[in-house]
Length: 294
Image (cartoon, rainbow, N blue to C red):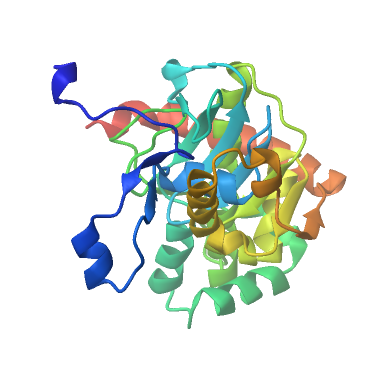
């Protein structure tokens, strides 16, 4: 019953104070405020200043997340779009989530015995750009998929392998497949009425300029990389704590976007090359979906 549930508060409100015995044990002062806080992606959004309507972030961590802040409730459950309250009063957010993103890069690095991800990324970037057009397609569903398929049976697939496919070509296919899966999620968000003009790129994968450019080209969307983008969730949690400890603070000022260190604009020619490959990527999944369940 509701009587067994805790009271609800906003992420930037105080839920209480730290217990006296814990504050003493940890060497902290009295009256330490405990904020409502947020989940990891909502906290990253607060850290990146994604609080206004249709502001967005793209997270390239173990999983991949396309997160959009909203001023209204915009569900699309049929395509696995998550719609929740944001960590601030009166705000909502949507998420398109893919279950494997940077984890795919780690997997192919280990599989092909590359020294590490940085070395493999350098090999991918150095390969002849003409090889991208005939690289295998990769379905990045190494542990099933969420948005837009809601398919726990989906599996990873390389489609179109050849004798002359090098480690770099396989790595490129993996990066591209993750980008296409995020494009699937972006389209699901658009079906729910969301339109964004840019997105902040965060997470470990955002450190790669090449992968960032590939994502911008696949999505046909400008992406910004920010100072401290790999620490967005921790910064967001600290900002929520600051607001909870200082009621009446200017939320927009506290939650301002960190400085932009790089703007990644889509490249028209590369986007045009990717478009037919994306349509084939979608077709491969649609053909294989009935087989995955078996």
